[in-house]
Amino acid sequence: LMEVKEESEELSEVEEEHHDKPGEKPLSRLKTKKTYLKKRAKKSTTCTRCGKSFSNKQSLDVHIRVHTGEKPFTCDQCGKSFTQRGNLKSHMKVHTGERPFTCDQCDKTFLRSSTLKRHLRVHTKEKPHSCSVCGKSFSQLYYLYQHEKTHTGVREYVCFECEKTFTTANHLKVHQRIHTLEKPFKCSHCDNRFSVSSNLKKHERIHTGEKPFKCSHCDKRFSQLAHLKTHERIHTGGKPYKCSHCDKRFSQLAHLKTHERIHTGEKPYKCSHCDKRFSQSSYLKTHERIHSREKLHTCDQCGKSFTIKSNLKIHMKIHAVEKPHHHSLK
Image 1: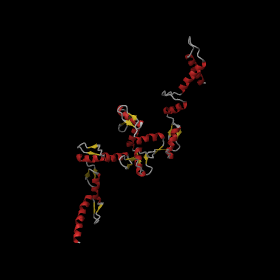
Image 2: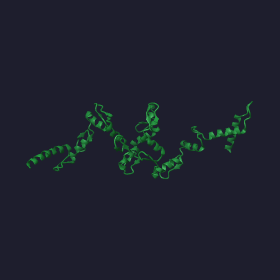
Image 3: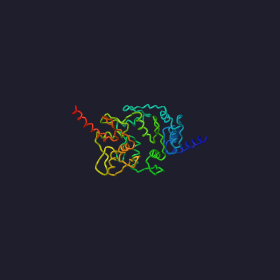
């Protein structure tokens, strides 16, 4: 009854708005009603919370769930809820293992066509999203948004444990696992767990043997992008890591760190049996064999074993001298 009254009042308002003016032809009631219906249709598909308009009421109803937090579609496998039925259907593929979209470049499979489309840019090197400030390009719009915050200085997400700030809620969430020690990502092949999903993906390649990163100079393939980049410097001769104490340059960061200990005198590797310290882990391993009496280097001539390879090499010279001597006796 209230709705009928409201409609009647609104229609009267529209009729008043279009009331015949002197010298004008009378406005037909039909035209007045059409104007009213058009106004009412627009009003009924506009969100009262944020003013956003939609082409139909169904789209508006779905949108309103953003404000209300309503998620009526629930997964019967894990209990996760969604605002739209389509999102639930996509999610169900996680449980069924269905990945219907396949990359024709590397045979990688995906849950959604949009994810495949983004992935293809890895192969095409396409970066359609450019920063308006510095011109840097990105393959995904999300990465551009995060990059743009470096110009504005916006870091709105704060960790209450250590007061570190982040540009996105997701970066903060991942960081907080350092404090909570939470590792929600479990390997499906072993009991290893990880705090970040990307680390799980890297780890699982140990089990699957997958090597998706191919060298553009030779046929070598790698399980991690960082390993590929390091390898490609063999071909390019790139040495991006420069020593801060001298002019020496290195192709790998690990090699630079090892070298810089010559200047700093740092010896981070301590023997668990005595107080001796070493600048490299390999030196520590060699030293610890003195305590364990482990002798890995064996002479193939007489069977004598040594803890250090260099000692075996010195020993082998004895046999090298002996051989010509035996020939002369014959």
